[in-house]
Amino acid sequence: MNENYTSFSKFQCGDLSLNLESPQIMGILNLTKDSFFDGGRYHEGDAFLKQAEKLLKEGCSIIDIGAASTRPGAELIDEEEEWSVLEKPLLKLRKEFPQIIFSVDTYNAAQVKKCDAIGVNIINDISGGSWNEEMYAEVSKFNMAYVMMHIKGEPKTMQSKTEYSNVIGDVKNYFEEGIKKLNELQFDNIILDPGFGFAKTLEQNYKLLAKMSQLEGLGYPLLAGLSRKSMIFRALEIKPGEALNGTTALNILALQNGAKILRVHDAKEAHETIQLFSLYKEGERAV
Image (cartoon, rainbow, N blue to C red; front, side, top):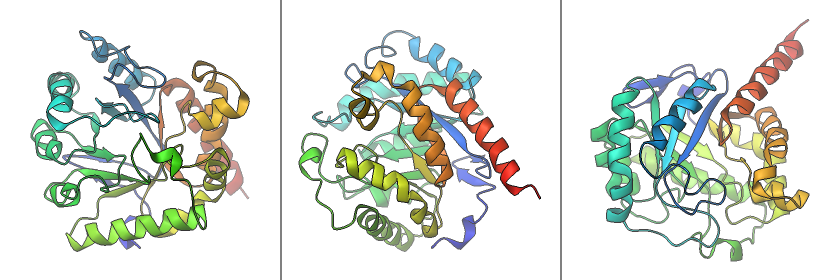
C-alpha cells in the first residue's frame, strides 16, 4: 500500500500536479479513424485542437490522446505508425495549452521518452505493462504518472479470456504484482484503472463496479473508464451514441465506489455529475 497518497492532494504528473481530493475529469481525444464511438472525428486538420478546447471549457483537467483503437477485435499498431499520428498533434497541443495535463494512451514503451520530451504528463497504458516488457523500466525513468489498466490478452483476443476465480480479487492481485514491480524500480506515481469492458463479461463488469472500493486499499487513485461502453449500450439494447444517460448513471456509482478520475467523451455531463456528487458528499458529512 502507498502510504504517501492518503489524501491525493498533490498527485505529481510530470511538471504539473493534480489535486485529487476532489474527483477530476479526463477527456478522451481520439486521433484514430476506427474507435467505437468517435473514431474519425478529430484526426484530420486541427479538429483535435477545437475538441481539446471544448473539453477544457467543459471541465476537464486532463486530456487523454490516443492514436490506436483498443476496441474489442482491434489490431495492435506498431510504434512508428502510432508516433506518426501522435507527434504533430502533441506538439501543437502542448504549445497551445502549456498548463494543461496531457495523457497519452499508449502501450508502446518506445513512446515514453518521446512523450516526456514534449512535456506529456501521464502515460495511460491499457496493457498495464503486460504487452511490452520494457514499459515499466521506461516509465520509471521519468516523472510522469502512469495509468496501469487491468486486461487479459489483447483487444483481438480479450473477450475470450473472461475466466476469473473472483473478478475483483483477480484484478486486485494483478495490480499488486504490477505495483510491486514498479516500486522495485523506485516508481510510485501510479493510477489504477480496473479496465471496464476489457476481458470482462457484462456481468463481470457490474460485479467489478460494485466492488471497486476494495481497490482503494492499495493506496493509489482509481480511474473509471465507463463512457458509452458496451456494458451500457448492450445492457440497454441501444447504440453507443445513445449511451450518455447510462454513462452518467454509472459514473455516479463509480464515484461512490472510490473513483478519483472519470475518463469520458462528454465532459460537460461528467462535470455536472461531479458537482452534484460533491454536494451529496457534503450532505452526507453534515451533522
